[in-house]
Each structure stands twice: as structure tokens, then as C-alpha cells.
Length: 357
Image 1 (cartoon, rainbow, N blue to C red):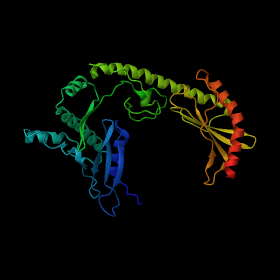
Image 2: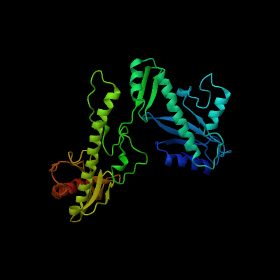
Image 3: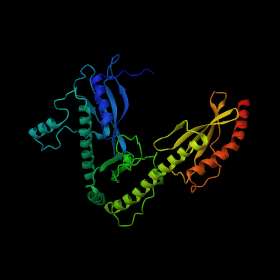
Image 4: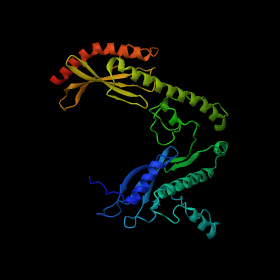
């Protein structure tokens, strides 16, 4: 497969600025050229985060005129989204002109790397308003009431979902916690501010979140405060579990020496080197978000035995060793060490049998 040519420097700088500085997790699906045998690509599909999903917009530049502003092609499903056209028949020419002059497309400056950033965020804000208008046109009294009670919350996003084979549905997303999760975990690498509606699987699993009961007659404005109180407790508990995992990995040093590899942020994985006689093998530790309630899973990997495909021979996952979440980290590590002293003999035999086969 032939790779596409690179973007021109000025366009590449704008795209990089958008991806690095945006508070939203924009992504690029593909980059391609509008001409055959061109030195440069000049268009790409941008995945725009919205309502816990992504909408696809094609950003179309012209490689022959890279200093010109790009076009944006929206989805066919959003054919009524025309952000720079008249909002209504009553809008006069002066109003349209004033709105265009406020747009990031007006007086485009390709030397400013932030221009695409400003344009895309402007279009996204208009798209949020467009979807709100669509939802506002739905003739459903309960929907109108629910949205009216929470619309004052910052960051509300709503969208109307429809299709040929299903009835219209309204999806609305409410940011819940006014908590900067990035600051709760030491050296956290998240670039964007994380909201609880994202599935932060390194910290906690959304499937395990316990929600308060919904009482008949309740509305969202009444339910959300209770939900936030419940979630903050569970998030802080998940952060505490990170500390417990870190103490466990640090305790490995006393019996196994410093780990060869370890996850320094969320402390979900670690690998140590073990030696018994002339037999050398690795021990991979996998710690779930429920540690220490759930014990680590161990996988042994020989550094001397390989299968017919040249891959190192590894044991099945092991968790049949003594464990109690009430033990301190030092005792947990000592019990695992004692288990491995006995298990390594069985693993060596397992490796020899696998090589013979």
C-alpha cells in the first residue's frame, strides 16, 4: 500500500496546533491528496468529538494554493447544517455580512498556526447550537421539561438521532463532576481535562460504577446531585487504589530487585527478572483496577525456550497463590515470592515439554 504524500508545511503546522492545543480530543482518520502524483496531500478527515461520539468532517485545502482558507464538508445527515448561510429568511444582508466578518474564515492568515484551531472550534460551537435547535423542535413535553431543568449546566450537549429504520431519539450528555481528574493521579499524562463520562479504564471501569436508584416522578435536575455525590466517592476510591498498586510495585524490589518495566502512572503492570540456577524467566504482573480486592494475575515467560514460531514460551495466567487484600504490600510480595520458588520448577518442565512438541 502506497502511503499518501505529506501535507504542505503551512497546513501541517495548523493541523498540529489543533491536535496539540485543543481541549477536545480531535482525531485524524485519513489524509489524502486531491490530485494524482502530487507532492503534497491537501485534505483530511477530522473526527470531531460531540455527544460522546465523533462526527466526521472533511477539511479540504488546495495544495496549489496552500495559503487559502480550507473548505469544510459536513456529513450528508447534517445537510441542514449551514453555519455561514442565513439562519432564517428574515436575516438581512447586513446581518449576514456581520456574521461572516466575525468568522475565522474572514481575512484568513495561513501563517497563523492557530487559524484552523479557531475555525474548527467555531464550527463545533455552531454545530452544538444547530443540534440544540433540532432537539428543540421535537414535540415532546417531557423532553422539553427535562432539558429546560439542566440546560443551565455548563457543557450540555444534545443531539437528535434518526434513521430510516428507527424512530427519532434524543441523546443528551451532561458533564457531571467538577473535579480535575488529571490532578488526582501523580504524573497523569492526559492532555485534555477528563470528564467522568469518558471511560477512564486505566483508573476505573464505567461498567463497575454504582448508580443511585431513580425514583418515580424524579427529574434529571433532582437526580444529578445524588449521582455526583455517588460518583465522587467512587472516583476517590479508584485514586486510592492507584496508591495501593504503587506501593505493591515498590515492594517488589525487596524480593525481586527493581522491575525491568513498570507502569509509573496507573501502576497496572510490572515485569521482573527471575533466576533459579541457570533458568532465567520473566514474571509479568497485571493489576486490575480492583486491586487489592482482586489479586494480581501472573504470567511467566521463559528467556531461554521458544516455540516453533520463535516466540518465547509463556505460562497460562496464574492466580492460584495465597492472597488477602488485608495484607500489607510487603507480605503480599513475600507470599508471591514463596509461590514462585515452587512454581518455577513446574514452569521449567512446562517449557521443556513445549519445546519437544
